Length: 108
Length: 121
Image 1: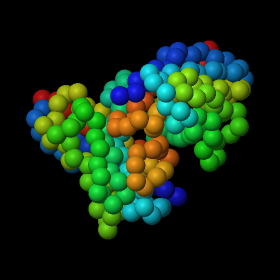
Image 2: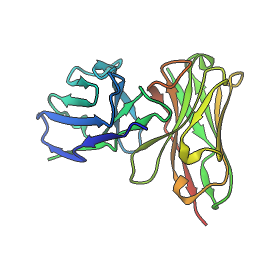
Image 3: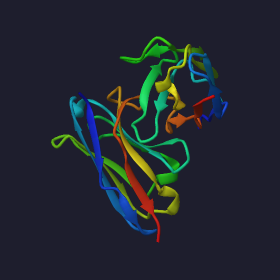
Image 4: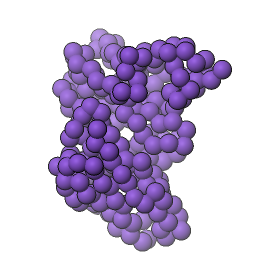
């Protein structure tokens, strides 16, 4: 099983600032990585796939990078609606599909 | 637009059974793989099970193997999760999730709102 580790667990950021979230895989997953945003009481939303390709309707302030075992999600200028929990998920080696533990982005 | 509406959640005693349903609309249900993903209270997301577009292949997490069964009825555009021998650790919100592909698990482009399953005596 590929273990996904996200850091930090919580990130405190002021609106307008940049947020950088990390995701590490226990073995290489190539570029087979997706990022999701999850707000309380809502369905999770796909942000990125292929480590860096934005999903339909996702604004360009969300960007992704990395391959192999190290990945980054960057939110260039945080808006109020961006405060949420973010998860990475690998789809290279399955079953199982595996998620990271999540990073909560909160208002500083 | 794509809609996934789960139902069937509730409170059940340890050792009991429950069947979740997911009504799909807004896309060609029979052309996509489908999943169940859960989130225990205060925890992260956990993949539970996948079924191929035609129901011919299924995969599930080790934690539910032998207890949970995923199935689908393409004539009714409905996904199911039969949960038997339920344990307290199965308590979670269960999401019905659409895969972007048809044959093998990949990633998820649409999620339902979830249904809460509580296992408690």
